[in-house]
Image (cartoon, rainbow, N blue to C red; front, top):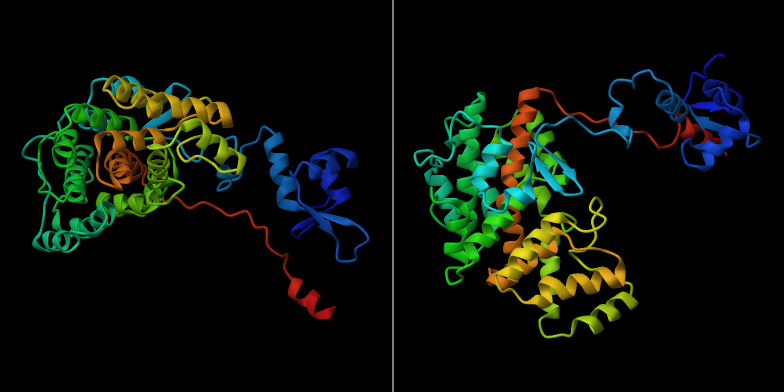
Length: 407
C-alpha cells in the first residue's frame, strides 16, 4: 500500500495502514482516536495521517518516534528519581512524606530530596549572599506581597553568589540551601538566618501560639514536593536551558501564583472566613444548589482524599483547632459533593488557626515547594538535556487559503 504524501489518508489507505476493517476505522473515529473531515470534493471523508500512524505505533511493539513520547497519556513526561505520588501520599526518594512530617524538618526533607549524604548544606556557615542592591530591592518592596518581593530579590541573587553555577552535586546543594534561606527571610521581610526554617516562620508570624512551630514544620514537609505539577515542570523546563538555580526558582514562583495551583490556598481561606460565623450545613446546601465548587476540595489524583491534608488536619485537631474546620466542614462537603479535602484547604485551616497574615497560604506553599523545585532543577541539570516538547498540529491543512479564495 502506498502512503499518502500529505497530512491525510483516504478511508481505504487508513484502514490498510492499520490492517483493520472500515467499520473498525469508523469506530476509532467515533472514539476520538482519529480525526476525520470531509474531503474538499465533499463526496468522502479523509483521515489525519499522523493520528493513524500514532495509533498504529501504540498498537505495535516498536518504540515510539523520537520526540513524540509525551503525547501518550499513559506514559510519563520524563523519568525522575526525586518523588512519586501514591494513594498513601507523595514518596520522597522512597520515603512517605506523611510519615516524614511526623518528626522531621524541611531541612531534612531537602537533604533527602536533593540526595545529599556527604555534607549538611544547612550548616551555620552556609549563609545567603546578599548584595547592597538586593537589600535595597527588599526594602523598596517592603509592602509588596511575599512572592513578589522574593521574585524581585532573587532576580539579583545569581550575580551576587559566586557559586551560583557550581556544577558539583554538593555545590548545588549548598546553593540550594542558600536559596531556601534567602527566600524564607525575604518573604518574612527579615534578615537571613541559620535558625530552623519553621522556627523562623513561627517567630515572625505566630509568636504567641505554642503549637505554631510544630504545625508549620509539618505543613512545610508535606508541601515540599509533589512530582511534576505545573510549577515543577516549569522549573525543569527553565533549568534545562542551563540557567542558575536562583532563576529556575523564579520560574517556579511565577507559575505557583496561579489560582489553579498555589493560589488555590488563598481561595480556600476565603471559604474558611465565610464559615466562621455561619452554620456549615445550610451554607453548603446553598452553594451546592447554586452549582458552586468548594476551593480546597477535589483532586485529580487523590480521589478519596489527600493524605497530606488528612495528616495536617489531624495535627491541627490535636492542637486544639476548631473541630468545625478540621472535621465538620470536610465531612459535610464530601457528603454533599463527593469531593474530598485536599492540602489547599488544610493549609487554609492552618493559617486561620494560627492567625497568620493574609496571603501566607501561598507564601508557605512557596517556601516549602522551593525545596522540591531545587531537587528537580538539579536532576534536570545533571541530565543536561533541553526539554523541548512537540505540538500535535490541529490547525488548517496546507493550501486552505487558496481553496477559500476559490470559493
